[in-house]
Amino acid sequence: MRMSEEEFAEYLRNNKRVDGRDFFDPRPLRMEVGIVERAEGSAFVGMGRTWVLCVVRGPMECVPSHLADPEKAVLDVAYRMATFSTEERKSPSPSRREIELSKIIREALEPAIILDEFPRMMIRVYCLVIQADGGTRTASINAASLALAHAGIPMRDLVASVAVGYYEGKILVDLNAIEDEICADVPIAMMPSHNKITLLQADHRFPLARLRDMIEAGRQAINKIYDLQRKTLKEVYEKIARDIGE
Ligand code: ADP
Image (cartoon, rainbow, N blue to C red; front, top):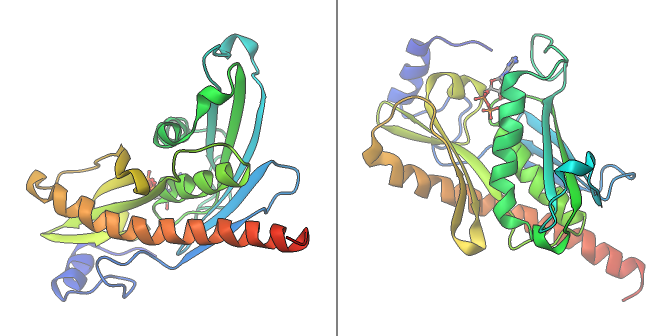
């Protein structure tokens, strides 16, 4: 769906979002772990029409071996968009954007993972965007954090993430693709129990004086995402406990 900026601005002036959500509401969330049997950890995250599958392999031998770090495990993150994830077929070759987002997602996750428990090893994280409608990096971070926990990788906290937008004085949480195209956009990731921000980016201009309000709005949505991440993991472990008769 395309929309002119004038049409978009009209929605906001009438205090409405294009998909009818309240300004601080995240999109409907879906989470599931244990999707891929062959992997140590896997997770699906849906944030509205943005869907990401994340697979975690390892800890395993570091390949290529010259990348091995004697102090800690190397975290390798690959973010890709499936060719069918966008309206127009996306080229299958990795774009500069995908390479950059792989690095950004890795940096958002690293502070939460206790990497020094696995010196010389590698942990691989694959994030595949199945359907893209804005916020694919934040959905990837949410899915990767779930998949890492599902793989049993020791972590200080989960990482939860959302993008917060700004347009003509209004703050909008969890932007869809139409909103992402028009608004200034601040993707945020946090380790909620540690009250620590692990990612803060800014795309386009917005008044710096509103940044604190934007982070606060993001925090509310992040807490909702975090609660569902924990509930999703808890249900899996409760089922395992039931299956082994504990
Ligand atoms: P994010 O997905 O984290 O918001 P961007 O701001 O780079 O990252 O992208 C915004 C949105 O633009 C994506 O979620 C997707 O819906 C759309 N998009 C990105 N890259 C492409 C592409 N190659 N083809 C079509 N749409 C794309």
